[in-house]
Image (cartoon, rainbow, N blue to C red; front, side, top):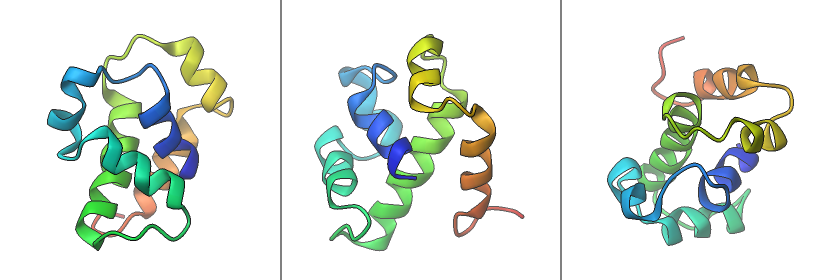
Length: 92
């Protein structure tokens, strides 16, 4: 999860102008969660949103940065899918 948050805020995947629209949080809010991991000081709704949208958009947003994606996740998309499936509120 920590790598996904880091990729979302530090990677080339999401343009600044679109970040808060996609995530419902601005980049600095997601960065604060990433930097405070594993004990971020935020409410559970914001934490869950940051985690869920990081995973979903890394998996499905057309970021066109496959080389960077492989640097962050050399094991592939399956690790993100498995993590997403374990989040609260996700269908099992």
